[in-house]
Length: 302
Image (cartoon, rainbow, N blue to C red; front, top):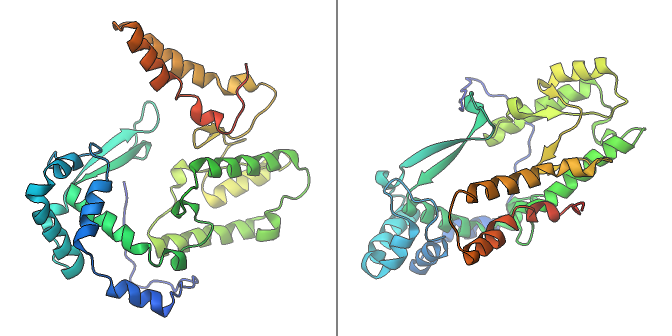
């Protein structure tokens, strides 16, 4: 699924490194993990979520903490404070699940790493350490690190960007950032993406990427840009984070999938025997939750 390329001569990246203040850098080096931090990381995790290769969920450690708490704490402290890493802890199961129907390529699957609970506890402790300097090493635009921010915020921004592309007949605001939408600037953007991939190790997946333009852009220009950035052209991104990217006059058709999902659940329940109370619980716990995410942004038609 992923490949790593090692070049003999790496080009110097034109990316300025983030300079952390001296007191923050010194604070990170002087931090030592404590006993109460390990215990807090264990009990903060979901009890029955994603057991590791040993089959033991976090609940096993929480229920038997009086018996095995000292062993777990000792192993974590040896790794975090002394660098004595246990090889048995660094084991994982990789589970693939399809993102699309009729998946036949490896890129059509996403993966889940099922690591051991001890590994997750140490990772949680490291994340708590970063809270000391997190404000100095990230940008304010990285909203995922800030409490109170939701994924729905990104959906609203994406919806507004596509909405502007559809209604404006003049130059869009991105021309102020990239000068002009031509081949030269697109090549510069592509080189920048390559530099970011080398610096961060996170490469862009062009097989899952696509781009769209305003309807006034000529077809020849679209084809040329598609060859330059090596992605497919689409008239408009139909969905982003599970929600429609644009709306038109036929609003009801955009939300037909919600009805299909609800009826598929109901059809499954018809073959099972439930009491009146059981049906009520299923409706409140399953059916009512399905449209909730969409209703955060859109007013559903009657």
